[in-house]
Image (tube, rainbow, N blue to C red; front, top):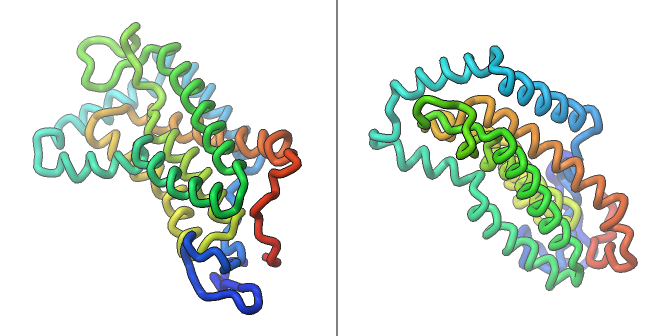
Amino acid sequence: MTSGVVRRQAGASAGDGPGDATAVPARVLTPGRPPWWLVLGALVVTLGITVDLLSRGLLERLDLQVSEVVSSWDLRESPAYWPVWAVTQIGGRGTIVVVLAVLVGWLCVRRRTLLPLVRVLTALALLTVVVYAFKFGTGRTAPAYPGSFFHRDGASYPSGHVANAVLMWGVARWQAVEYRLGARLQRVLWWLSVAGPVVTGIAMVSLDFHWVTDAVVGAAVGLLLLGVVHALDALVLSRWASARAGRPTAPS
């Protein structure tokens, strides 16, 4: 399963990318559905941190201390700004949507199924509704905002970039594994689904764009929504009569 060996149908040509329509690689990774206990843990973290922040608790003081240190680095006015900003775009919606458009477009056309597209649209809809409900509901301002941390114009909590990285790279990895695209592509998307949220969060905090708790809760919300999308898929989406169209049948 994890050896990276790719088994192919007899007579199939070699290939490791989505353009090789005859190759049927094995699943070299798992689809990445989070276990129930991890989803539950993400929910507890989200609720616990939110309650603490709204009550002006210990975690807000920790955020202030970290922001004070980060502000002293002054990366925004240094030559490091643009390289670090580029790292934040690993979690940018535009970046991930471009990758997903290519991946899902190829799957829909070549495998004759709309299921990958429906999964992506479901994830994007949930992400938009839930993240912006938190942002506008809490009204938390970004670290650079002077004098207030909860304000009607605030929209810092949680980090949409980190939530986006967890959820959407997770969905991309899921599609690559389920439809058994090339082993190399499966591994690249696995790394993006794991390391992408981490480096995005570190970059956002280091530029003082977000508080530490914004990044942590962004990751928790993304993980929670990934579990929800997988559950919806199992209960509804994959029950369509044509939902299994295009899925390889080679043994994993």
